[in-house]
Length: 144
Image (cartoon, rainbow, N blue to C red; front, side, top):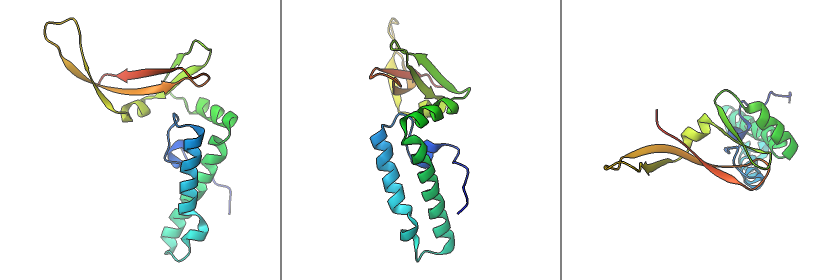
């Protein structure tokens, strides 16, 4: 087998997100590896077997990086783009969330205070953990 380039997003290769714990990533990797292992793909038509093998290889590559805390931190730093938001934590670490992750989170209803009439607006929200300590913050975004 030839060495393949890693998938665009290692988290999506595992069906996970950057806020998942190491144990959650490991569990998702094991599920994918068991489901798509080449030994389990015997007897399938060649296109199904090839697609399963590709998913297996992508999961393997993703776990190799995301399963190592130092490599995961470096990957997370490289994956930052113009659409990511960071905030410094008091411990010196940082909170990081991308716009894509924020928009995929749940919609929250929040009322505004101070008016005679109370208006409800939808907000996208997520709890984001510091990459160094156990502190977390709730990040919300108003709809466009």
